[in-house]
Amino acid sequence: MSKRGYISRYLLILKKLKAKPFSTYEELQGYIDNQFDYQQMLDDTLNIGFSKRTLQRDIREISNIFGIDIEYSKSEKGYFINQSETENMNFQRMIEAFDMFNSLNLTQDLTPFIHLEKRKPQGTENLYGLLHAIKNKFQIKFSYQKFWEDEISKRTVEPYALKEFKNRWYIMAKDSKDNSIKSFALDRLSNLEISNKTFLHPDTYNIEQSYRYCFGIISPNDEEPQDIILSFDPFQGKYIKTLPLHDTQQILVDNEDEVQIKLKLCVTHDLIMELLSFGDNMKVLKPDTLITEIKTAHEKAYKQY
Image 1 (cartoon, one colour):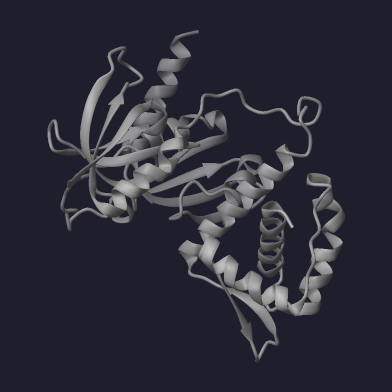
Image 2: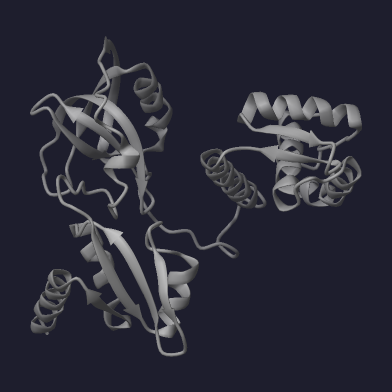
């Protein structure tokens, strides 16, 4: 069997156990058999054989390749995925990526079926190298061009973490130019060099804590988070409930007139831009300072017409 055949089978096992934890061997076998025709659409030379011996080998390989542990529960009489919340998020993203990869490979001419956004690459070709530098605490160098500047600058930084926001990836790093921790967009970064010079990661920096009460990529610095209360019309409220603005989101009111939510966030430019995008479908109820900022921005926009 081709490597693609093995990988396809591994991911079918994972998808089944995600959808139905504590599946028996017979249930896994039935699911893989039912998916065989679809998998052959992707590769007509594919032959996905499956047995109890194959399953045990697959479980070992899934652990080695994906870092996901599958165990058998005697009490539940079935197999399940043993993972933490963070591992679960990584797993979901991996499955999403594989599903997209398979879908795009169904046909060479996607135009009649899929309309893809026309955008520049996200700079993800440097993800592996950056992760390597972060884990091993290697200083890195690269060329960088800001959106608002034509000039390309050379940067030498200590990379601390990677962060994703709105389909863009950023490297959080201390810039040797002024010893400040900044975010650099990967799609604006080129000519990456990983040096052998190591650095000490500051004990005071933790990306989860730094952005705990932050929407977006702009660091709140020393600003304290505030309780923010927003009111959405019922239609927009359905989207807010299914795709929360932030993990601090709480629903306060949910009726036929409005959906009211509470957030605990620092007020940054990224947050203000997001709130303005809702237009007249949203009203800020608290705090007063944010009400003033949103109102002023809408007034300025109105005066342009």
